[in-house]
Amino acid sequence: MSFQYEIKVSGRLSRTLAAEFAQLDLSADTRPVETVIYGPVEDQAALYGLLRRIESLGLELLEVRRAATGDDDGGGSP
Image (cartoon, rainbow, N blue to C red; front, side, top):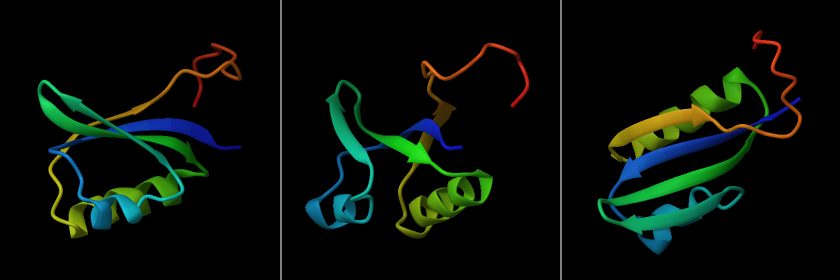
């Protein structure tokens, strides 16, 4: 089971950096200038791998959150 994650990084990604996240959706905000990376993450190991990639690219991580989906049962357990 995968979950949808929304990860915000500071700044706008160049085409080269955006290509590193081809399997995910990207959007950019201008106030403040930040990029939102959104999409499915298979498990915790994949999430940590994605965060390591962000760090290795020198991106400033602003926020990570699991997005609400219609599949959530509201049971409170992860």
